[in-house]
Length: 125
Image (tube, rainbow, N blue to C red; front, side):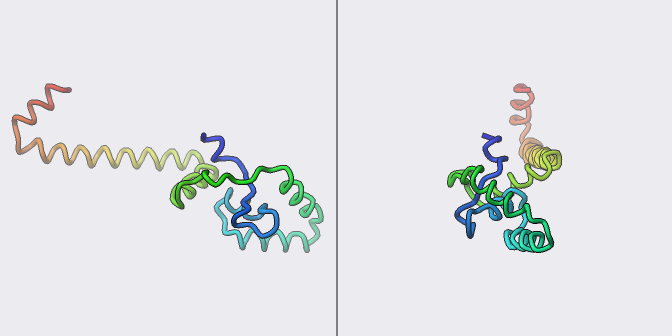
């Protein structure tokens, strides 16, 4: 399932012609307007192979499945995974540490005022 979300897809829903620029924008997390402008400027600047690469990507890449992301937050998460997997892993670990710390605070709050509950929790450990 992870490989499916870290692949490049054409984005026909947000695309204008074949969805390649929208797919690049989705893959990198850059706004599609900047990808399109960059494509036009680089093509006019003399990189004549870009239209050929555009059509090759348009014909060879798959269309983005509609079920790929549940919501915008999930899309942003997977864009972060594609851009920097190590940074995303650090952020997830930091989130889990924060959840663990908050859970320990809640446990301490309830256990400190209830010695019977404290004894029960200690028996479970």
